[in-house]
Figure 1 (cartoon, rainbow, N blue to C red):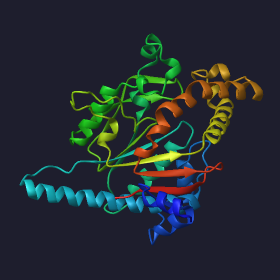
Figure 2 (cartoon, rainbow, N blue to C red):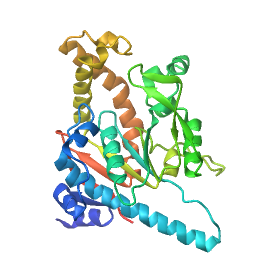
Figure 3 (cartoon, helix red, strand yellow):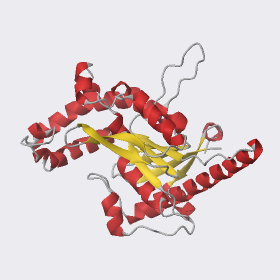
Figure 4 (cartoon, one colour):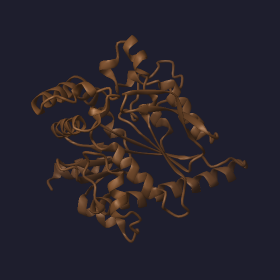
Length: 319
């Protein structure tokens, strides 16, 4: 390593690990998932096997268990200092990254592993899809082509949800989103009841915004996070994964007449590839470049994937 590289590493806010270096940090953490459970956690286009869980996610779950325990210790110390009897607040983990990068798989694996740590914490998972504005609202505001951009979310409702979770309220409700109808499900809600850990997954959960000149507090979603994970991959790889997923859905879910994308079910391979690429370039690439990728340096931990979906590098923010 030359002097410039050494200097860059010295001032790098992240400690970077190769896959093999990170895998060693599993130590003696037991494998609590079997092959069938791992397969059930995997999204359609993701590559996830026992080896990936053992080498990447077990060390990460071990690290997270330490962070959660340390936060609890700090909570107890603060409570003694203040002389109060507050209830412990949920530990909130954010999972961010581009469309098609595999956020849902990562979030589900972490939920499954963390829930099996002693003393079996209650771990809930919520996606920000439910906090998108309904399609009727997006159409009215001319935002259908920007679905997934920060402005397409009902941010006040999402912030109220997180505030209620962090305050320890009972039975906090969140809207439900259907990937079949590509819309919010009317009159349907999911309840989150005082979890020990909440995982919030979404493309823009690390997004900030313009700060006010008067210094009045402006909350961001990430203000509620205790730890955050960004799933990373190169843009050409992400495009390839998105097109591959689109083709797979064309052969499956799009054939359901209730599917919002049913009109694409009979496209040829060439037509479907062209359609998916156009959607990627028009919407997902713009969102990635303008809103998602710029938030990567805000994450506590970055998982870098290669073309085969295997995580090749782990970057952990220094304390």
